[in-house]
Amino acid sequence: MAVSVKPELDLLTRLLARLQPHFDIPLRLVLWNGAQHDLGTDPLVTVQLSGPRALRHFLPPSLDNLAEGYVNGQFDVLGRAQDIVDVASRLAETGVPMRGRFGRLFNPARHDRTRDARAIEQHYDVSNDFYRLWLDEAMVYSCAYFPSGTETLAAAQTAKLDHILTKLMLQPGERLLDIGCGWGALAMRAAQKFGAKVVGVTLSKNQYTLACERVEQAGLAGQIEIRLQDYRDIDERDGLFDKITSVGMFEHVGLLHLPSYFAKISALLKDGGLVLNHGITSTDPDSGECPLGAASFIEKYVFPNGELPHVSKALRDMQSAGLEALDVECLRRHYARTLALWSDNFESQSDAIRSMVSETTYRVWRIYLAGCAHAFAQNWVSIYQVLACKAGTSEALNPTPWSRAYMYPNSQSH
Image 1 (cartoon, rainbow, N blue to C red):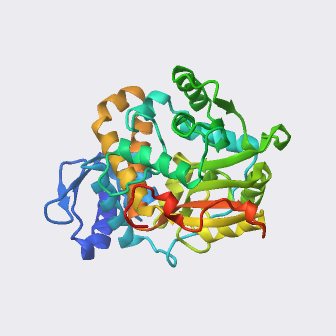
Image 2 (image 1 turned 30 degrees about the horizontal axis):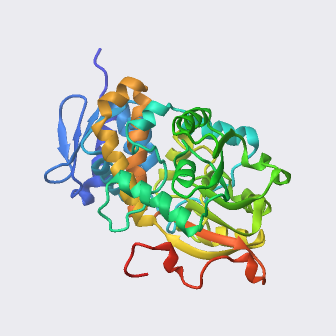
């Protein structure tokens, strides 16, 4: 008895009819029976469908639907990761309403210590060797800083660490707290080049173990203490800090918890001290999430409970916590370039990565890195460094010079 092909043909007809007005997309669809449909001249990306069910991921072709189909093996995709994401975004624009600019807003996620620790573990504890394959040698997993726009990834990451520590006016012997210290790169730079005494905290067991090893190997155990600790458990009675950094961490805090986060930082900071918060933000004033379904994919597979505030909310909550913003710098273009370089590194190490992790994990991260590069390039999300001191009228609370020239000691213009 012959099996009816009408349902699958109906799906294909609906899909092609929807895409017909947009046949300038450089995409080739290869069906399970070998038939091909080009949606534009000179396709850069080829999607090989495993069967009729795969078509459902294109109806509608939202970014989360498309990513779900790819991650779960409903189709294979050939092409550069960044071309794939660009094509996916163009597909999504043909059938997914933007609902204003940003699609649905975040529902404030529930955050507690257990959930936050679990979320950090899901993202950062894939394995240290996994991250080592596509990060720079120092394993800095945050936005790099490209003073001229032409630096290598390694040089730009070193420049970022120095840019942060220079903004903070870090001095020898000062006590620095690094919240979310990663694998210890900033702590080590602060100790080695600036002579600081550093406490670094992380919730990732893998990061903690390797950071401790690297500190020991560098002979910096007398200057750096790495803790597996929630920042909320740091007791100000054990001593306040001259300087505080938080790099790529406040995205995990949650919109409703930003006031208490900044209040804790303020409580840990000495009068006359400085804090630098370096974090990803929404470009929607209402703290909306990425459009076209991108945020749903990230929430499910990569960053559970991650929430991005608009920079205006971050500044408001800092002020409410008794911190005065002294300098605000947008690094959106820098993160687009950083992520593009990570994505290129990931592609070049695809065989090694596939031998180390499951195919699903490989596909999730391949799309995630290229997708984030696209999101920053499209101004869907941004990132800011905010330098702050204790708020008040006393001149002693603000140690910075009248000019910000000190932040750019190697630049001819400020």
